Amino acid sequence: MNHLASPTRVVLALAFAVVTVSLHTLPALGLALGLALAFALAARQPWRLVLRRLLALEGFMLVVLLLLPFTMPGRPVAEILGFAVSAEGLERAGAIALKANAVAMAVMALVGGMESVTLGRALARLGAPERLVHLFLFTVRYIEVLDREYRRLRLAMRARAFRPSTGLHCWRSIGYLFGMLMVRSLERAERIDAAMRCRGFAGRFPRLDTAEERCPGALDWLVGGTSAAAMALVIMVGQ
Amino acid sequence: MSALIRLDGISFAYDPARPVLDGADFALAAGERVALLGANGAGKTTLLHLMVGLVSPAGGRIHAFGRERRVEKDFFEVRARAGLLFQDADDQLFCPTVAEDVAFGPLNLGKSPAEARAIVHETLDALGLAALEHRITHKLSGGERRLVSLAAVLAMRPEALLLDEPTNALDDATRQRLLDILAGLPQAMVIVSHDREVIDRLATRAVTLEDGRLI
Image 1 (cartoon, each protein chain N blue to C red):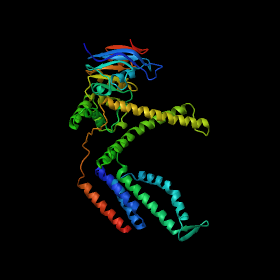
Image 2: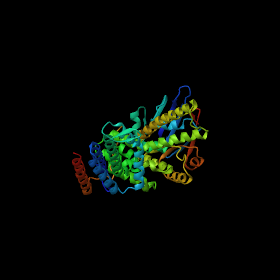
Image 3: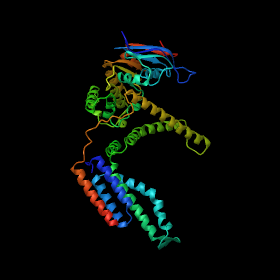
Image 4: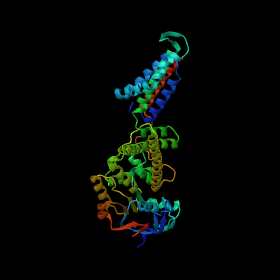
Protein backbone atom coordinates (compact mmCIF):
# COMPACT_ATOMS: atom_id res chain seq x y z
CA MET A 1 0.00 0.00 0.00
CA ASN A 2 2.77 2.40 0.92
CA HIS A 3 4.44 1.78 -2.43
CA LEU A 4 1.43 3.10 -4.31
CA ALA A 5 1.65 6.54 -5.91
CA SER A 6 -0.19 9.07 -3.76
CA PRO A 7 -2.74 10.11 -6.44
CA THR A 8 -3.75 6.43 -6.80
CA ARG A 9 -4.44 6.27 -3.08
CA VAL A 10 -6.55 9.42 -3.13
CA VAL A 11 -8.59 8.18 -6.10
CA LEU A 12 -9.14 4.78 -4.43
CA ALA A 13 -10.24 6.36 -1.16
CA LEU A 14 -12.66 8.66 -2.98
CA ALA A 15 -14.12 5.86 -5.11
CA PHE A 16 -14.53 3.62 -2.08
CA ALA A 17 -16.29 6.33 -0.10
CA VAL A 18 -18.72 7.10 -2.95
CA VAL A 19 -19.51 3.41 -3.53
CA THR A 20 -20.02 2.67 0.18
CA VAL A 21 -22.21 5.68 0.84
CA SER A 22 -24.48 4.78 -2.06
CA LEU A 23 -25.06 1.22 -0.76
CA HIS A 24 -28.22 0.29 1.14
CA THR A 25 -28.32 -3.43 1.90
CA LEU A 26 -26.55 -4.97 4.86
CA PRO A 27 -24.77 -7.82 2.98
CA ALA A 28 -23.24 -5.35 0.51
CA LEU A 29 -22.15 -3.10 3.36
CA GLY A 30 -20.64 -6.10 5.14
CA LEU A 31 -18.65 -6.86 2.01
CA ALA A 32 -17.53 -3.21 1.80
CA LEU A 33 -16.33 -3.41 5.39
CA GLY A 34 -14.38 -6.53 4.42
CA LEU A 35 -12.75 -4.62 1.57
CA ALA A 36 -11.87 -1.76 3.94
CA LEU A 37 -10.34 -4.32 6.28
CA ALA A 38 -8.25 -5.61 3.38
CA PHE A 39 -7.01 -2.06 2.68
CA ALA A 40 -6.18 -1.63 6.36
CA LEU A 41 -4.25 -4.91 6.41
CA ALA A 42 -2.34 -3.93 3.29
CA ALA A 43 -1.48 -0.52 4.78
CA ARG A 44 0.04 -2.25 7.85
CA GLN A 45 -0.97 0.54 10.16
CA PRO A 46 -0.53 0.08 13.91
CA TRP A 47 -3.75 -1.59 15.13
CA ARG A 48 -3.92 0.37 18.34
CA LEU A 49 -4.01 3.64 16.45
CA VAL A 50 -6.69 2.41 14.02
CA LEU A 51 -8.84 1.12 16.89
CA ARG A 52 -8.45 4.29 18.89
CA ARG A 53 -9.55 6.39 15.93
CA LEU A 54 -12.49 4.11 15.19
CA LEU A 55 -13.54 4.27 18.85
CA ALA A 56 -13.55 8.06 18.65
CA LEU A 57 -15.86 7.76 15.63
CA GLU A 58 -18.08 5.27 17.50
CA GLY A 59 -18.39 7.69 20.40
CA PHE A 60 -19.49 10.36 17.98
CA MET A 61 -22.28 8.17 16.56
CA LEU A 62 -23.31 6.36 19.73
CA VAL A 63 -26.35 8.44 20.56
CA VAL A 64 -27.74 8.28 17.04
CA LEU A 65 -27.19 4.54 16.80
CA LEU A 66 -28.87 3.91 20.17
CA LEU A 67 -31.86 6.13 19.46
CA LEU A 68 -32.59 5.09 15.86
CA PRO A 69 -34.28 1.72 16.68
CA PHE A 70 -36.68 3.56 19.00
CA THR A 71 -37.41 6.61 16.89
CA MET A 72 -37.84 5.03 13.46
CA PRO A 73 -41.40 3.96 12.77
CA GLY A 74 -41.85 0.38 11.54
CA ARG A 75 -42.53 -3.24 12.52
CA PRO A 76 -41.87 -3.64 16.25
CA VAL A 77 -39.61 -6.58 17.16
CA ALA A 78 -39.05 -5.98 20.86
CA GLU A 79 -39.91 -3.64 23.67
CA ILE A 80 -37.47 -2.08 26.11
CA LEU A 81 -38.79 -0.13 29.09
CA GLY A 82 -42.05 0.31 27.31
CA PHE A 83 -40.53 1.67 24.11
CA ALA A 84 -40.93 -0.29 20.87
CA VAL A 85 -37.82 -1.28 18.92
CA SER A 86 -38.48 -1.27 15.17
CA ALA A 87 -36.86 -3.66 12.70
CA GLU A 88 -36.33 -0.85 10.19
CA GLY A 89 -34.63 1.24 12.87
CA LEU A 90 -32.30 -1.61 13.79
CA GLU A 91 -31.43 -2.16 10.15
CA ARG A 92 -30.80 1.53 9.56
CA ALA A 93 -28.59 1.79 12.66
CA GLY A 94 -26.62 -1.25 11.50
CA ALA A 95 -26.22 0.22 8.01
CA ILE A 96 -24.96 3.56 9.37
CA ALA A 97 -22.47 1.85 11.68
CA LEU A 98 -21.16 -0.35 8.85
CA LYS A 99 -20.93 2.54 6.38
CA ALA A 100 -19.15 4.89 8.74
CA ASN A 101 -16.64 2.31 9.90
CA ALA A 102 -15.92 1.01 6.42
CA VAL A 103 -15.31 4.49 4.99
CA ALA A 104 -13.28 5.61 8.00
CA MET A 105 -11.11 2.51 7.93
CA ALA A 106 -10.49 2.74 4.18
CA VAL A 107 -9.69 6.46 4.27
CA MET A 108 -7.34 5.92 7.22
CA ALA A 109 -5.59 3.09 5.40
CA LEU A 110 -5.34 4.89 2.07
CA VAL A 111 -4.70 8.53 2.94
CA GLY A 112 -4.24 8.53 6.72
CA GLY A 113 -0.56 7.64 6.66
CA MET A 114 0.22 10.26 4.04
CA GLU A 115 2.15 13.42 4.85
CA SER A 116 -0.21 16.36 4.31
CA VAL A 117 2.24 17.87 1.85
CA THR A 118 2.11 14.67 -0.20
CA LEU A 119 -1.68 14.78 -0.06
CA GLY A 120 -1.65 18.36 -1.34
CA ARG A 121 0.61 17.42 -4.23
CA ALA A 122 -1.53 14.38 -5.03
CA LEU A 123 -4.62 16.60 -5.19
CA ALA A 124 -2.77 19.03 -7.45
CA ARG A 125 -1.76 16.22 -9.79
CA LEU A 126 -5.35 15.01 -9.91
CA GLY A 127 -6.36 18.41 -11.25
CA ALA A 128 -7.71 20.07 -8.09
CA PRO A 129 -7.75 23.88 -8.53
CA GLU A 130 -4.29 25.30 -7.84
CA ARG A 131 -5.65 27.98 -5.53
CA LEU A 132 -7.36 25.43 -3.29
CA VAL A 133 -4.23 23.30 -3.14
CA HIS A 134 -2.13 26.32 -2.15
CA LEU A 135 -4.73 27.29 0.42
CA PHE A 136 -4.57 23.76 1.82
CA LEU A 137 -0.76 23.77 1.97
CA PHE A 138 -0.66 27.24 3.55
CA THR A 139 -3.16 26.06 6.15
CA VAL A 140 -1.06 23.02 6.95
CA ARG A 141 2.04 25.17 7.15
CA TYR A 142 0.64 27.86 9.40
CA ILE A 143 -1.98 26.14 11.54
CA GLU A 144 0.80 24.98 13.83
CA VAL A 145 2.31 28.45 14.00
CA LEU A 146 -1.10 29.86 14.97
CA ASP A 147 -1.58 27.07 17.48
CA ARG A 148 1.78 27.92 19.05
CA GLU A 149 0.74 31.56 19.22
CA TYR A 150 -2.55 30.55 20.86
CA ARG A 151 -0.74 28.38 23.39
CA ARG A 152 1.70 31.20 24.18
CA LEU A 153 -1.17 33.58 24.83
CA ARG A 154 -3.01 31.02 26.94
CA LEU A 155 0.15 30.36 28.93
CA ALA A 156 0.64 34.07 29.47
CA MET A 157 -2.92 34.30 30.74
CA ARG A 158 -2.43 31.38 33.10
CA ALA A 159 0.85 32.84 34.30
CA ARG A 160 -1.20 35.75 35.56
CA ALA A 161 -3.56 33.45 37.41
CA PHE A 162 -6.34 33.35 34.85
CA ARG A 163 -8.78 30.49 35.36
CA PRO A 164 -11.78 29.89 33.14
CA SER A 165 -14.96 30.47 35.08
CA THR A 166 -18.42 31.72 34.34
CA GLY A 167 -18.44 35.45 34.58
CA LEU A 168 -18.07 38.55 32.52
CA HIS A 169 -14.33 38.81 33.25
CA CYS A 170 -13.72 35.34 31.84
CA TRP A 171 -15.78 35.89 28.70
CA ARG A 172 -14.18 39.23 28.07
CA SER A 173 -10.68 37.77 28.50
CA ILE A 174 -11.46 34.90 26.11
CA GLY A 175 -12.79 37.50 23.69
CA TYR A 176 -9.52 39.45 23.96
CA LEU A 177 -7.59 36.22 23.43
CA PHE A 178 -9.34 35.42 20.16
CA GLY A 179 -9.31 39.05 19.09
CA MET A 180 -5.57 39.17 19.65
CA LEU A 181 -5.15 35.90 17.80
CA MET A 182 -7.00 37.35 14.80
CA VAL A 183 -4.90 40.52 14.83
CA ARG A 184 -1.70 38.52 15.07
CA SER A 185 -2.76 36.18 12.30
CA LEU A 186 -3.51 39.13 10.06
CA GLU A 187 -0.17 40.71 10.86
CA ARG A 188 1.61 37.46 10.24
CA ALA A 189 -0.17 37.11 6.90
CA GLU A 190 1.08 40.58 5.99
CA ARG A 191 4.65 39.68 7.00
CA ILE A 192 4.52 36.44 5.00
CA ASP A 193 3.29 38.41 2.00
CA ALA A 194 6.15 40.88 2.47
CA ALA A 195 8.68 38.04 2.73
CA MET A 196 7.31 36.49 -0.44
CA ARG A 197 7.50 39.79 -2.30
CA CYS A 198 11.11 40.14 -1.11
CA ARG A 199 11.88 36.99 -2.98
CA GLY A 200 10.32 38.22 -6.17
CA PHE A 201 6.80 36.84 -5.78
CA ALA A 202 4.46 38.46 -8.29
CA GLY A 203 1.27 36.47 -7.92
CA ARG A 204 2.24 33.20 -9.58
CA PHE A 205 3.60 30.10 -7.89
CA PRO A 206 6.49 28.49 -9.69
CA ARG A 207 6.67 24.70 -9.56
CA LEU A 208 9.74 22.75 -8.59
CA ASP A 209 8.89 19.20 -9.51
CA THR A 210 10.57 16.75 -7.23
CA ALA A 211 11.69 13.24 -7.95
CA GLU A 212 8.97 11.60 -5.87
CA GLU A 213 6.34 12.54 -8.42
CA ARG A 214 6.06 9.67 -10.81
CA CYS A 215 3.55 8.20 -13.20
CA PRO A 216 1.31 5.34 -12.08
CA GLY A 217 3.30 2.13 -12.39
CA ALA A 218 2.30 -1.52 -12.79
CA LEU A 219 1.55 -1.82 -9.07
CA ASP A 220 -0.83 1.15 -9.20
CA TRP A 221 -2.75 -0.36 -12.12
CA LEU A 222 -2.82 -3.78 -10.43
CA VAL A 223 -4.13 -2.55 -7.07
CA GLY A 224 -6.44 -0.03 -8.75
CA GLY A 225 -7.87 -2.70 -11.08
CA THR A 226 -8.36 -5.25 -8.32
CA SER A 227 -10.03 -2.68 -6.09
CA ALA A 228 -12.31 -1.55 -8.93
CA ALA A 229 -13.37 -5.16 -9.51
CA ALA A 230 -14.01 -5.65 -5.79
CA MET A 231 -16.11 -2.49 -5.64
CA ALA A 232 -18.09 -3.61 -8.70
CA LEU A 233 -18.79 -6.87 -6.87
CA VAL A 234 -19.93 -4.96 -3.80
CA ILE A 235 -22.31 -2.89 -5.94
CA MET A 236 -23.69 -6.06 -7.55
CA VAL A 237 -24.37 -7.62 -4.16
CA GLY A 238 -26.14 -4.41 -3.20
CA GLN A 239 -28.55 -4.52 -6.18
CA MET B 1 32.58 55.50 -4.36
CA SER B 2 28.92 55.09 -5.32
CA ALA B 3 26.61 53.57 -2.76
CA LEU B 4 24.59 50.40 -3.36
CA ILE B 5 21.68 51.83 -1.41
CA ARG B 6 21.23 55.46 -0.45
CA LEU B 7 18.43 57.06 1.56
CA ASP B 8 18.10 60.86 1.47
CA GLY B 9 15.97 62.66 4.04
CA ILE B 10 13.54 59.81 4.54
CA SER B 11 10.53 60.41 6.75
CA PHE B 12 7.96 57.84 7.66
CA ALA B 13 5.12 57.44 10.15
CA TYR B 14 2.63 54.68 10.90
CA ASP B 15 0.78 57.21 13.04
CA PRO B 16 1.13 60.85 11.85
CA ALA B 17 1.31 62.07 15.44
CA ARG B 18 4.44 60.01 16.12
CA PRO B 19 6.84 59.88 13.16
CA VAL B 20 9.21 56.91 13.17
CA LEU B 21 11.72 58.42 10.76
CA ASP B 22 12.22 62.11 10.33
CA GLY B 23 14.82 63.07 7.76
CA ALA B 24 16.99 59.97 7.98
CA ASP B 25 20.04 59.76 5.69
CA PHE B 26 21.87 56.52 5.10
CA ALA B 27 24.25 54.99 2.59
CA LEU B 28 25.55 51.46 2.16
CA ALA B 29 28.70 51.06 0.05
CA ALA B 30 29.94 47.81 -1.48
CA GLY B 31 32.01 45.74 0.95
CA GLU B 32 30.67 47.54 4.01
CA ARG B 33 28.97 45.86 6.95
CA VAL B 34 26.99 48.46 8.81
CA ALA B 35 25.54 47.77 12.23
CA LEU B 36 22.22 49.54 12.67
CA LEU B 37 21.63 50.24 16.35
CA GLY B 38 18.84 51.87 18.26
CA ALA B 39 16.26 51.32 20.97
CA ASN B 40 13.27 49.03 20.55
CA GLY B 41 10.73 50.72 18.34
CA ALA B 42 13.27 53.25 17.00
CA GLY B 43 12.41 52.22 13.43
CA LYS B 44 15.28 49.89 12.54
CA THR B 45 13.07 47.25 10.92
CA THR B 46 11.08 49.98 9.17
CA LEU B 47 14.31 51.35 7.71
CA LEU B 48 15.16 47.93 6.25
CA HIS B 49 11.64 47.56 4.87
CA LEU B 50 11.89 51.00 3.26
CA MET B 51 15.09 50.01 1.47
CA VAL B 52 13.31 47.22 -0.37
CA GLY B 53 10.03 49.07 -0.83
CA LEU B 54 7.84 47.03 1.51
CA VAL B 55 6.62 50.34 2.93
CA SER B 56 6.88 53.65 1.13
CA PRO B 57 8.24 56.81 2.72
CA ALA B 58 6.16 59.92 3.35
CA GLY B 59 9.08 62.02 2.17
CA GLY B 60 12.63 61.67 0.88
CA ARG B 61 14.32 59.68 -1.89
CA ILE B 62 15.53 56.12 -2.14
CA HIS B 63 18.35 55.29 -4.55
CA ALA B 64 19.27 51.67 -4.98
CA PHE B 65 21.66 50.02 -7.41
CA GLY B 66 22.15 53.07 -9.56
CA ARG B 67 18.59 54.36 -9.88
CA GLU B 68 16.01 56.20 -7.90
CA ARG B 69 13.25 53.80 -6.80
CA ARG B 70 9.73 55.03 -6.30
CA VAL B 71 6.99 52.53 -7.09
CA GLU B 72 6.42 48.80 -6.47
CA LYS B 73 7.68 47.91 -9.96
CA ASP B 74 11.05 49.63 -9.33
CA PHE B 75 11.57 47.61 -6.18
CA PHE B 76 11.10 44.20 -7.80
CA GLU B 77 14.73 44.35 -8.94
CA VAL B 78 15.92 45.83 -5.65
CA ARG B 79 14.49 42.92 -3.68
CA ALA B 80 16.43 40.45 -5.79
CA ARG B 81 19.67 42.38 -5.32
CA ALA B 82 19.25 43.21 -1.62
CA GLY B 83 18.16 40.13 0.30
CA LEU B 84 16.14 40.83 3.44
CA LEU B 85 16.31 38.29 6.27
CA PHE B 86 13.21 38.61 8.44
CA GLN B 87 13.20 38.64 12.22
CA ASP B 88 10.93 35.61 12.42
CA ALA B 89 11.97 32.75 10.13
CA ASP B 90 8.40 31.42 10.24
CA ASP B 91 7.34 34.43 8.19
CA GLN B 92 9.82 33.54 5.52
CA LEU B 93 9.57 29.77 5.18
CA PHE B 94 6.16 29.04 3.74
CA CYS B 95 6.80 26.29 1.19
CA PRO B 96 6.19 22.68 2.24
CA THR B 97 9.80 21.52 1.87
CA VAL B 98 13.19 23.17 2.34
CA ALA B 99 14.17 22.57 -1.30
CA GLU B 100 11.03 24.29 -2.57
CA ASP B 101 11.48 27.21 -0.24
CA VAL B 102 15.06 27.81 -1.29
CA ALA B 103 14.03 27.45 -4.95
CA PHE B 104 11.15 29.92 -4.60
CA GLY B 105 13.28 33.04 -5.13
CA PRO B 106 15.33 31.75 -8.09
CA LEU B 107 12.15 30.46 -9.80
CA ASN B 108 10.54 33.87 -9.37
CA LEU B 109 13.58 35.40 -11.02
CA GLY B 110 12.91 33.28 -14.08
CA LYS B 111 15.31 30.38 -13.56
CA SER B 112 14.27 27.01 -14.97
CA PRO B 113 13.44 24.21 -12.48
CA ALA B 114 16.73 22.48 -13.33
CA GLU B 115 18.73 25.65 -12.74
CA ALA B 116 16.80 26.32 -9.55
CA ARG B 117 17.55 22.82 -8.30
CA ALA B 118 21.25 23.34 -9.00
CA ILE B 119 21.14 26.61 -7.04
CA VAL B 120 19.36 24.85 -4.16
CA HIS B 121 22.09 22.21 -3.94
CA GLU B 122 24.88 24.72 -4.23
CA THR B 123 23.43 27.07 -1.61
CA LEU B 124 22.57 24.35 0.90
CA ASP B 125 25.98 22.73 0.43
CA ALA B 126 27.75 26.05 0.96
CA LEU B 127 25.95 26.52 4.29
CA GLY B 128 26.36 22.88 5.34
CA LEU B 129 22.61 22.29 5.20
CA ALA B 130 22.49 19.65 2.47
CA ALA B 131 20.95 17.13 4.88
CA LEU B 132 17.86 19.32 5.33
CA GLU B 133 16.94 19.48 1.64
CA HIS B 134 13.87 17.26 1.75
CA ARG B 135 12.71 18.13 5.25
CA ILE B 136 9.29 19.67 5.85
CA THR B 137 9.79 23.32 6.80
CA HIS B 138 7.40 23.42 9.75
CA LYS B 139 9.15 20.48 11.37
CA LEU B 140 12.55 22.19 11.48
CA SER B 141 14.00 23.41 14.77
CA GLY B 142 14.26 27.13 15.42
CA GLY B 143 17.96 27.19 14.56
CA GLU B 144 17.49 25.16 11.39
CA ARG B 145 14.70 27.51 10.35
CA ARG B 146 16.94 30.54 10.68
CA LEU B 147 19.75 28.93 8.65
CA VAL B 148 17.35 27.73 5.95
CA SER B 149 15.76 31.17 5.68
CA LEU B 150 19.26 32.61 5.19
CA ALA B 151 19.85 30.01 2.46
CA ALA B 152 16.56 31.06 0.84
CA VAL B 153 17.77 34.66 0.73
CA LEU B 154 21.26 33.75 -0.51
CA ALA B 155 19.78 31.58 -3.28
CA MET B 156 18.75 34.81 -5.02
CA ARG B 157 22.44 35.74 -5.24
CA PRO B 158 21.98 39.18 -3.69
CA GLU B 159 24.67 41.88 -3.73
CA ALA B 160 23.64 43.16 -0.32
CA LEU B 161 22.08 41.55 2.74
CA LEU B 162 19.69 43.28 5.14
CA LEU B 163 19.68 41.25 8.34
CA ASP B 164 16.99 41.90 10.93
CA GLU B 165 18.25 40.57 14.27
CA PRO B 166 19.85 37.49 12.72
CA THR B 167 20.98 35.88 15.98
CA ASN B 168 17.78 36.54 17.87
CA ALA B 169 16.60 33.54 19.95
CA LEU B 170 19.33 31.17 18.73
CA ASP B 171 21.24 28.79 20.95
CA ASP B 172 24.96 29.37 21.30
CA ALA B 173 26.09 26.70 18.83
CA THR B 174 23.72 27.86 16.08
CA ARG B 175 24.60 31.47 16.80
CA GLN B 176 28.31 30.75 16.34
CA ARG B 177 27.58 28.81 13.18
CA LEU B 178 25.53 31.68 11.75
CA LEU B 179 28.25 34.19 12.69
CA ASP B 180 30.88 32.05 10.94
CA ILE B 181 28.72 31.87 7.82
CA LEU B 182 28.01 35.60 7.79
CA ALA B 183 31.67 36.49 8.40
CA GLY B 184 32.61 34.47 5.32
CA LEU B 185 30.12 36.12 2.95
CA PRO B 186 31.30 38.77 0.46
CA GLN B 187 28.04 40.78 0.42
CA ALA B 188 27.63 44.25 1.83
CA MET B 189 25.39 44.09 4.90
CA VAL B 190 23.14 46.13 7.09
CA ILE B 191 22.82 44.33 10.40
CA VAL B 192 20.14 45.19 12.93
CA SER B 193 21.16 43.60 16.20
CA HIS B 194 21.31 44.05 19.94
CA ASP B 195 23.93 41.32 20.14
CA ARG B 196 27.30 42.87 21.09
CA GLU B 197 29.31 39.99 19.64
CA VAL B 198 27.56 40.20 16.26
CA ILE B 199 28.43 43.87 15.99
CA ASP B 200 32.03 43.49 17.21
CA ARG B 201 32.74 40.57 14.94
CA LEU B 202 30.94 41.56 11.74
CA ALA B 203 30.45 45.30 11.54
CA THR B 204 32.88 47.66 9.81
CA ARG B 205 31.01 50.68 11.18
CA ALA B 206 27.93 51.39 13.24
CA VAL B 207 25.12 53.93 13.01
CA THR B 208 22.46 54.61 15.61
CA LEU B 209 18.85 55.46 14.95
CA GLU B 210 17.63 58.06 17.40
CA ASP B 211 14.63 60.40 17.22
CA GLY B 212 14.02 59.44 13.61
CA ARG B 213 17.55 60.25 12.42
CA LEU B 214 20.74 58.31 11.96
CA ILE B 215 23.78 59.44 13.93
